[in-house]
Amino acid sequence: MGRTLAIIKPDAVRKNIFGYIISAIEEAGFRILAMKYIRISTEQAAEFYAVHKEQPFYKDLIEFMTKEKIIPMVLEKDNAIEDFRTLIGNKNPALAEEGTIRKKYGETVTYNSIHGSDSLENSEKEISFFFSKSEIMGNCTG
Ligand code: GDP
Image 1 (spheres, rainbow, N blue to C red):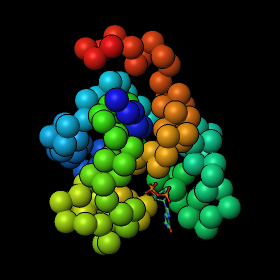
Image 2 (cartoon, rainbow, N blue to C red; image 1 turned 135 degrees about the vertical axis):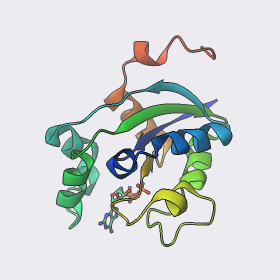
Image 3 (cartoon, helix red, strand yellow; image 1 turned 90 degrees about the vertical axis):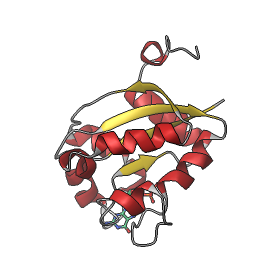
């Protein structure tokens, strides 16, 4: 079984549609191993997106990710990372494939509703950024 980190982003929380996104995730066969509903600090967002710190959109991204609560989740499925990237679609909702979460709920490349880890190495880092081992343990799949 593979794991990935998903984050329902502030735009989806603000629009009061995160339940639909969680349903789409479950319908696609992912099991939610852990989930939080939290507002992160500027420092936490800056650390999470440190890889983008030289990018022109970095400041806007940090501001966006801290202005409302977010929902980080640990998801489990065979081929979780790749299958979740397929489910969410292109980071630009205008370019995302029909039926993807970003196509359906995203608005712009910043306001794109959801995050998914892009590699095994990043998924491990991102999962431990938000969750301790004990917060992930104890679910029905062990
Ligand atoms: P993702 O893995 O598909 O989310 O895409 P990236 O890792 O490349 O970027 C992380 C996040 O930064 C994206 O989800 C966007 O919210 C934001 N982002 C990335 N590229 C751009 C860009 O060119 N412009 C803006 N405004 N935001 C971007």
